[in-house]
Amino acid sequence: MILVLDKNIMSKRGIMSTRQTLQRRIQISRGNLILMAVFTIVNILAYWFEFRFMLPFSAFLPFTIFDFGYYFSMELNDPALFTIGIALASFIILVYFLGYFLSNKKPGWLTFMLIMYVFDTVVMIYLFTMIFVFNGSMILDILFHVWVLYYLINGVIAVNRLKALPEEFEELEVVEA
Image (cartoon, rainbow, N blue to C red; front, side, top):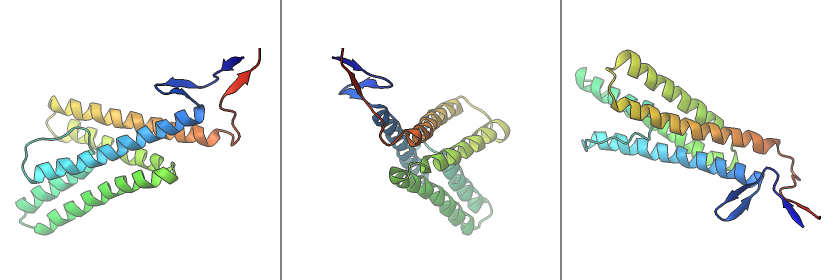
């Protein structure tokens, strides 16, 4: 008896089928999504409570909106701007959490999360290169954005490949010799 492992990979626990491999990639992508959303909240809270640290593995846009809302509310003496900043930042983070939970049953939500994070990355790079004074710490933010993008793209690809698999896909073939 010869075991043919067409399109299968080895894991620490043994052989993973194509379907299992794709599902695992989707789960890893979702894990990175929720971690990024949680770290974004941690960054906003750390900023608010003046803890003087930032975690790079987070979304840029919600923090920046929160920060701008705070800054302009102080500069213009208008607390409504801070409230608007909190509301917009909260909405974006809420959408990330919603995307995480909904992508469990409908993995297509990862595509929307990828689009949101690409927009977040484009805004970050624009502000870093055109508006802010660029410094070395920004490179770490860019690298972590690339990391999250990689896993979101990998998850979206896995979703599309999983959809393309036939329902009765023969995952392991045993060939008699």
